[in-house]
Length: 443
Image (cartoon, rainbow, N blue to C red; front, side):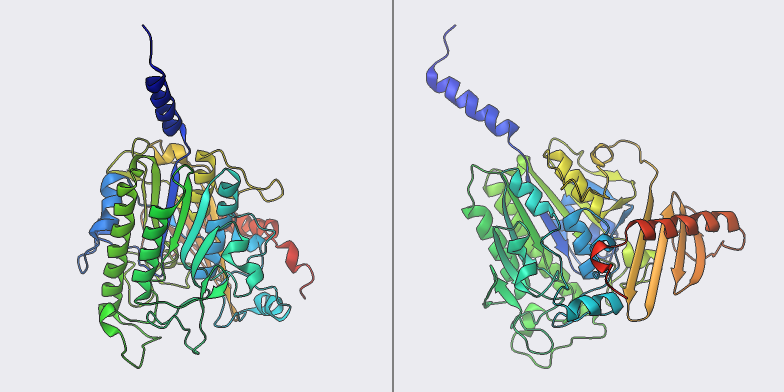
């Protein structure tokens, strides 16, 4: 039986499309509580588009941020490594590129506070695999040009440099303009959440359709200042404190834009070949909800480090499934890289684990994971090994069994001193192992 040339060509194109590397769309919320989505039990707001990722993909019930604040979590997410290895990025970089603890202050004084170009990011790894890459949203990995997204593997970037900005003026609390497009000062024409979503949608439509793409969309919502779409032109702006009503509206506005991104993927005919992920960078502050967990943003209690995590990958991950695997942000990075055949630099191997089997439904594997947070004089640390978690708050220790006490109410350190001792030793060994080379000169 003869096969026409046209049929053979079409068959070849279909085979090529079927084997093309998957696109990756990574959406990050800012300060979103682990209980502030409908698919995680929220009743005060509606997030149908984000919730659809749980319906059509995997919902994670044991997912953690690598840190309880913006900068360190983003560092771990982009590098797939514990942020402590970089040095100076163990809390959010302060307004105007200010260091907020001793090592970070030392780096800022030297003009070195940010993610160095020597670090390998997920964008860089994917770019080497033939991906086109873009970032629209919040960076917060250093204000100086030497630390910009375009120097870390992103072909295009548009967004704010620091932790938060006026949603209409794109200025920080001190009035500094922090919106940049490919390193150049830019202006926004509307509500920042909507502008981020619009640019992400436009980029999907205009990209090179012959190449796989990596789109990173780190929204700054619902981080303060507390401004809704209805607040255009209003002053003064509420930068601090709590505002639950505004927080909910800001989250719903972000959900609208996630819906636009998902529609753009569908319209590009790329739905079946696109991995879509949604998560938050840390637990919620006072405006959000981390129920039933103790603590909030900036703490290493569960409420400060638990995050919502949703992943959709049609044909690969079972729709409507739950993953109970203990998962950190850096594991997401390692798993995505492995899924497309990407490798980190030899001198900077991933700390994150390839958990694709668990994403697909395999039984959870035991993990031992660690946290350390520094700000001013505060030193907060935690280690989780199986169901046990040791916390050190400025040297004050406590021990919890998360299986029986997820709210961390009953301190078992006095009852289980051997467990505490073992975890203390593991935490100390981890701290020695992740010591940052660039801090060797720090005294």
